[in-house]
Image (cartoon, rainbow, N blue to C red; front, side, top):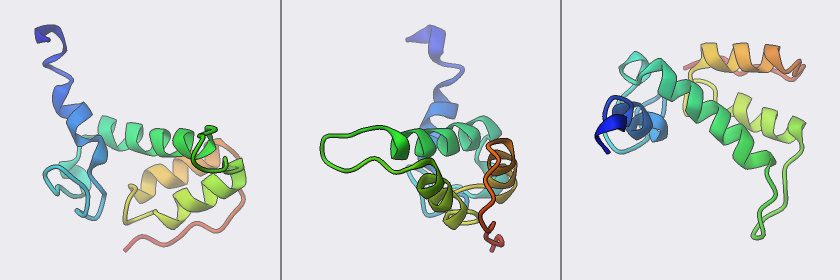
Length: 97
């Protein structure tokens, strides 16, 4: 769809990991567009807390703990800090690699 061509690279990059282990391009850190890093973080939280027929739903605290565990590897640590603060999560924030 030509009208969506401008956002296609942002959507494509939502599966990249902050440490480069994601896909499809294996990009890292700020090479991943900020918008993609934000969407990836929010999507992961939403997916974990959404009921699925093939697994149990995680609580908000369980999902937040998983997000924190992925800080610096899967997720941008600065975004994790902002996200957890925004939601009032009091768990331990992992140090970035």
